[in-house]
Length: 324
Image (cartoon, rainbow, N blue to C red; front, top):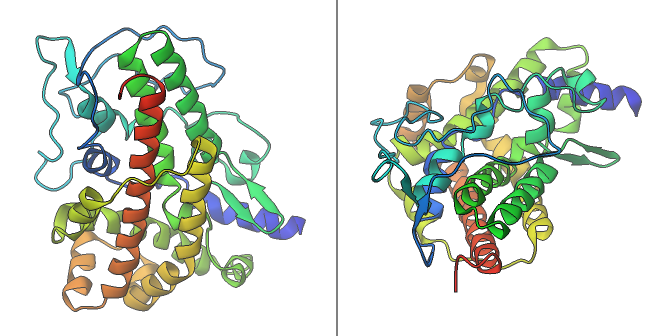
């Protein structure tokens, strides 16, 4: 068991730099219809004592709206929008949630000493952004990252600080979105993980599979047809309870999709998985009609995730007085 756990973590380390890409677009589409009482928010300074450590070289607490500071250079570079603050100090709710949802991938969780597990995986980023629950293995902190920032958001709203209430909430959404990615819940099938003990090619392929599926979401939202956008926009809120129930439901659904997603990626991309698959190659294989099952499963993940997050947001924002 100890040996298997070590191998699992070693393989995980190969994927730590990766997460669902396109957080900004995914969040933007999810939060379009929030019935906020006062949609404009005054920018405020950060004034919080936290029990969570960050890499201070990358932590940003000033407002960076209008700068696309955390956005990937995707698509036409204009979606989603990121205008400058109105009158220099006012932002709409959708913009705070959108522009700060990618923030945790910008380095604030890297280079830290969090717990003994990172001695096996070599990086603190994955500790905070993933959650493995495989048999006797219960590792990493992606779920508690989500819960932590929900509570920080709750505290900010109680203090009347709407700006940091929404900014902390944007960070919480990041971790929920990460855990909707099947590879954030499992690094591979058990046999592949064990074979990776002696086979470097298997380790490399598992890393590339994770990276590829991250980029496939980007492809669907930015470069494919409108199916992903319409699926997210059209999803109806699902009310599942408190933040613990919300994140558990997202993780459980992602885990239920791992096997089919993993199979379809390997079937469609084959030997291409020995290298990093580029966006043009995703497009070429999609145009051949080889990704229709993968697309359907991914759209189901997006639909479920969007529904659960929409329900969570409506419930939470009503609790803190932002919604009647």
